Length: 249
Image 1 (cartoon, rainbow, N blue to C red):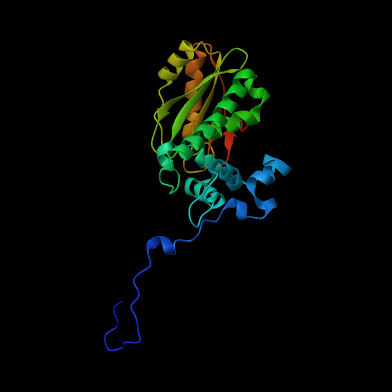
Image 2: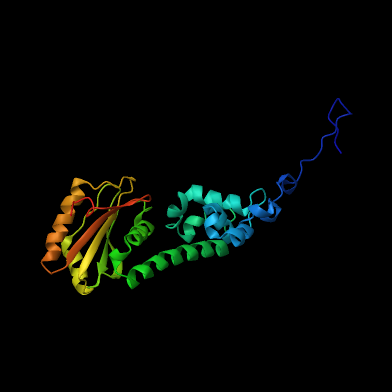
């Protein structure tokens, strides 16, 4: 073993291998029993768990120095909470260290099930029997998009959802919407009425003057083919504002 020149009492030790410096994994099973997400859920129900704890149940395991609960919190912070996470793809999740293909697939599958559950609910019932479900559905679909999307919910004669279609995509500040294309889709789907919706990526849900003008233009165009515009929602990740409720329709 080499000695430091001029001082035989000092020994230069070889550097420790990287794995010796790694922190041991902090496992969920090492947490107090009442703090473990699975046991907490079984004892108190899913509503008792935080968003990070629910994600930890999906992740199951973490990394050296970072347990599944900490990874769940990292996901929420990275993507802007649950609403932001709902719009992530498997490719987006690759940026999180420790999420392999299996975990990414599971997370994306659960998020898609949430969207489909709300969609089914709206198809089975008259849309405005469940106004909060409409808001929740639109926030899931549009609320966290980084660019502006104009979408239309096409409804049958009983005000049940036929389909939601994203018809136009714009920049962060404006969207070009063509009334003729909205009318063509309404006729093709045999829709009796529609609900318009678009998001404001800025995070401000207040309808603009341009939003009002667009609504009235579409309302007039659709009236020519006997299709009613029931509402126009302005959507952010935090809320969905009804222009009908504001008296702007």
